[in-house]
Amino acid sequence: MLTDRLGSMLPTWIDAVDASQLPGLTGFALHLLRDLDAVTAGLTLDWSSGGIEGAVNRIKKIKRQLYGRAGFELLRKMILLQ
Image 1 (cartoon, helix red, strand yellow):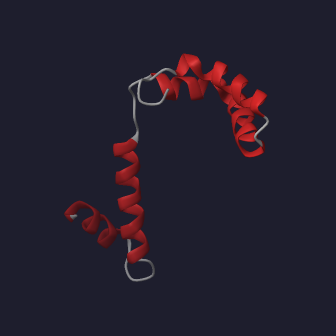
Image 2: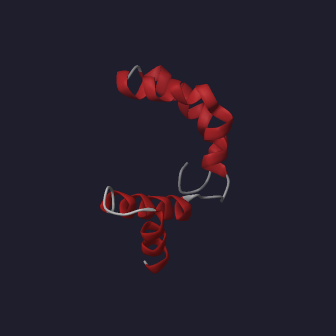
Image 3: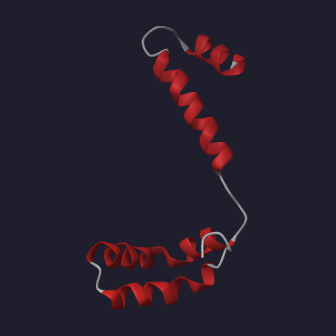
């Protein structure tokens, strides 16, 4: 379902997991029902925010390293130089 982008099979999978009575997996599957449209879109569409997530994490790492040592100008230069 993940590698072939078959998000349309998600409701069938949730029903099968619910019938299996596995406590941890059943709870996870039922929580997916809260926002089924978003989960289905995530499993179906080609869109990804992976690149943005990486950039944000890099900026947060630099900010943590400079915490209490410098102001915004140095933080800005460090982000632009790395």
